[in-house]
Image 1 (tube, rainbow, N blue to C red):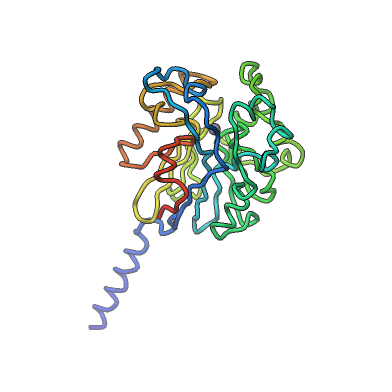
Image 2 (cartoon, helix red, strand yellow):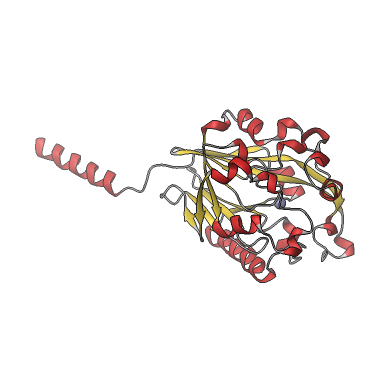
Length: 287
Ligand SMILES: [Zn+2]
């Protein structure tokens, strides 16, 4: 009997050694930094045909990811200064009139974290999809975090191509001053954030030079892909390309990459700015 006990203990030990990593994402929350709109969908996607055109009011997606090794925020939304009608004090007037942001102070990422039961200074990692004003807006609220961004995107933010500069969609105030001295994990491609395959950063250039998306495998086995601006909304998947791209070729490859990944892994694919998808599936926890 005693021998059998030892064999059983050894077997249990071996099983433990060979079992996959146990750290898993407990939960994640999908929220928005206020809304943009209403405005005609063709302002963003000029290729949408007349019979499919409509006015949209779209979310500005941000994600809170709760991994046992640390709390992650994916995109920090619009800068706090544009809250409660303050847009023109911080953004170019054209962006305020065009995007029509409705952000309230309570919509900003620090308050959203509070609402979800966390404080901003507990955030270990901030992943920024790209340096446009509605995604990198509040990195200065996270001076102690490690900031994960593609190296090219940092370069581009400081010196965007002229055709991307005209619209004022890179707001230097979002990432100047103290943000110059933050700790940046500067990537050149995909990255396995916690080394266990559960939280992946995916290189998806095109919308900007160094855009990145994310993929999370939840403890439940469900896989969630967050495209952010690699795919703004369903119309882009339906074959109408976004109207603002650094490279149409890279953008097309990134859309196809995420679509195939969704199909192969049977994942949910969530966009940054889809009115209908957010209405149905936003403002909630995923477990
Ligand atoms: Zn965006």
